[in-house]
Image (cartoon, rainbow, N blue to C red; front, top):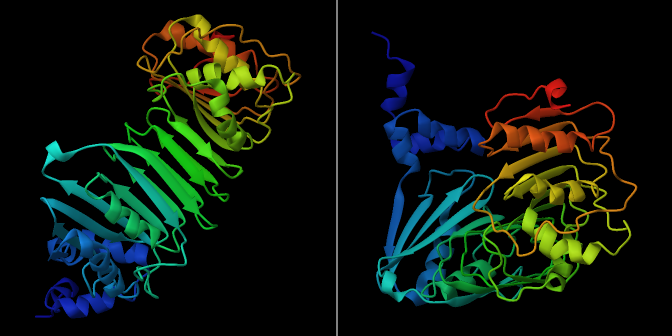
Length: 393
């Protein structure tokens, strides 16, 4: 009886299977993990190590040095390192030059505030973390604490080819400084709720995504973002935050093509600075706007209407209603804009999300339609349906 192709592969040793995978492009090679439990186990092998805080950077360096991008199953792609005070590091290599570093500790009583300072693309490196066959260009850095901040800083600062940095859920992180001579193009910071100070010494950022309470942001060098997500719906993280404290950040987003913005950020921090500019402050390049609104009543939409008058090239508008979003004191006051850009000529789509009241949704749609010139856009409602434009008008 002839042996089936499936049986043929099942009878091959792991070394031969790994060799076969090495001939596939990375995105197809990873899909082999879906074939069976055995294939999945090949991808899920974990290298377990024990050490001290002082040798963590060296262990990670060795882990990356052993990885062969042309033969991804030759050595484990995952590392679990246990070191001081019940602390561990999980490292995982993914396709397209990505690395995940996830720190964890079992002793929650040791949490306290700390600072991080990353000096990226530094030529004076202490460990060669980037072997010739694998260049880390994207790093996911999760759950750094004061116990692991020095370790994280040492590892990150030695990734000389890093272009994309994602920092997630670092409890206790109060101050963050990032220096990059040239290569860092994308920066994402998510859910670092204690962060109060963000110092950016980089001039090449093109994408900045932030979700959490607003810290004091100091962009030391000028850069123009093409993609900016400023999700500050939880309000400011510093007391006595003033509009002028936001001016440098405002300049970095002026030429954005994609922007996420909260209603209160525009009203309290942006509007006081641009309202006296007589219509000269225009978002000429903005094509896609993601707007987060508290929407207490029908007057709440005034901020969005005023902002849209500054966006003559807008093509897509996404409006999210979040009743828990921060509401700045004295909001909804004097939001009128004298500018020639009062009509949206290129708007093709309005997507409304989070509305629980159909009447409110229609009211908002009517206000937005009045700003449109020419062919009306498609309007999608919170329930996924399209709103009848004849009914709206």
